[in-house]
Every structure is written in C-alpha cells, then in structure tokens.
Amino acid sequence: MIPVNPHGPQKLSFLAMVQSLWSNRRLILQMTRREVVGRYRGSAMGLAWSFFSPVFMLFVYTFVFSEIFKSRWGGVGGDESKTQFAVVLFVGMIVLNLFSEVINRAPGLVLSNTNYVKKVLFPLEVLPVISMGAAIFHAIINIGVLLLAFLVFNGYLNWTAIFIPAVLFPLVVLVVGIAWILASLGVYLRDVAQTVGIITTVLMFLSPVFYPITAVPERFRPVIMANPLTFIIEQTRDILIWGKMPDWTGLLIYTLVAMATAWIGFAWFQKTRKGFADVL
Image (cartoon, rainbow, N blue to C red; front, side):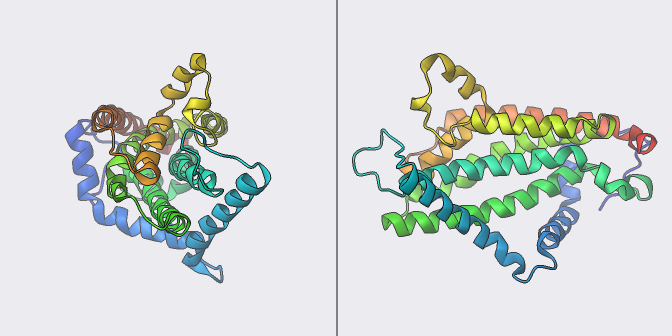
C-alpha cells in the first residue's frame, strides 16, 4: 500500500489512476477477500451461500416463468424449452446485479469507512474497486450456476462463453468510474443514496432483463438502447445463450467511453477527497 496525503496535491491523470490501482493491487485483493468472507461470517454455511443463493433464485425463476406465466422469449424458434426463459432472464439479472450491487453501495463507501479518512493515510480511491471486486466474485459464481443450468437443460455449452471477460470488462470499468463519483457525492450530499436506489430500480425495468428488445415498441427503443446495461446484457446473452460472436466494434466503443468515465470519476474523487475529513 502506498500512503496518500489527502491534503497534498493529487495526481489526476489517467496514468495516475492506473498506477494507483496497480501499486495498491495487494491491498485491493486482501480487502476484497475480507469483504467477501465478512459478508458470510457467522452463518452456518459460510461461503456456500454464494453458490446456493443463485441456484435457489434460478429455480424460482424457472418455476414462476415456465409454470405460472408460461413465458417464452420469442424469436428463438419453436424448440424453445420451458426453462429457456428463466435461463435467458438469469443472464440479465447477473449483469444487473453486477451493476446495482456496486452503484447502490457507492454513496456510503466513504461514510462507512470514516476511520480510513480521519486516522490513516489510506488510498481511499481503492474503496469502489474493492466493492467491485466483491461484486465480480458473486458474478463469477452466478455465471458458473448459469452455465451448469444451461448444460443440464440443453446438454451442451456454447464455446463463445470464453468471451465473457471481454464482454463484462467495459461494464466493470464504467461502474467503477461512476462509483468514484457517487462515493464522493455521498459524503457531501446524503440524499444521493436514496436517489441512486430509485435510479437503479428504474434502470432495471428499462433494461431488457424481463423482455427481449423486440418486444419494445419502435418509438421507445432509443430509450432502452441508451441504457448502459442494455448493450452488455444483449452481448452476454449472445455469447452465453445464442452462441454468437461478440460485437467487437461496439465493445471497443463502449470500452473507450468506460475508460473516459473512469478517468473523470477518479479525477473527481481525488479532487474532492481533501474535504472528506472536514465534512465527516
């Protein structure tokens, strides 16, 4: 860990962001591990909950949507199985949870770690990255459950699933950038947490999680496509469910925008951090 003086001049460049994350990589890994383990500390099953929880939810989705709603995704052909809708929906939930878990926690990250602000020269900028690390851990478990379910239901796996890191990477970068901004704003404006909760709920219904894009009327599709989750959800389904290659051009553009957002978020966080101790 490299100690940081919050009252000294902060480096705000893109290179400074990368150097900070790289130099603090061991700290990030250690605190991410503590974050994950601490979430299940004291429970009888411990980390096993991270596996059984998504399995249980997948069973619930399968029962509700295939037996009660009799739902079908549509546009997949007549051989769509009863459980196909639940599996396709579960992909959307994985992406949504990766996004919302970090974003919803971001406004309170600094507030819940005031000891790092007041007593220790601590690299506060790693807090959103640690939160993202824990979310990635749960996303990996969820993806494992999804692939297992897909194999059981269909008898095969699409080889294009190997591209899942490339598809989720730009979303991870984007979310960390937004989390830096929200973590800073959450110190000065305590209403940010409630506002973010409303926004993530709205984004859930404006994302193609429970419905295909084709079900959205043409005049409303630009709104859905403007949602940063839509492209990643569709790409994740393409490689995991439909066996299609990723849209590399779209992913490249998304990654460039995500990196710009991350840089802005990092610079904003570093610029405003000197006032944290005074507010807290």
